Image 1 (cartoon, rainbow, N blue to C red):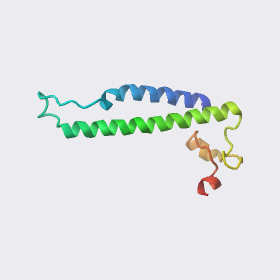
Image 2: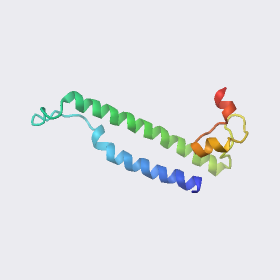
Image 3: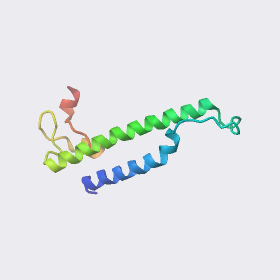
Length: 106
């Protein structure tokens, strides 16, 4: 599959995941009828996990947009630090990898 299309497909999937998780991130309200089934602590924990997942999706979305920009600029596949080509295996594992292995290691 074309790397650009794979990234665009992932953005679409992230949007769908955000839409599905929106209710779980909402303010927790104690339902007096449901106290026996789901405690407020459980609801707060579920809310915190949903918010954490939303932050992870946003970080991934930012990496994808940065990668698409590198593609548009003609710099995709080249290390953002040293300018050398990023190893093909690294790009195959994660299309958004911006740095070669040497620069990642420091």
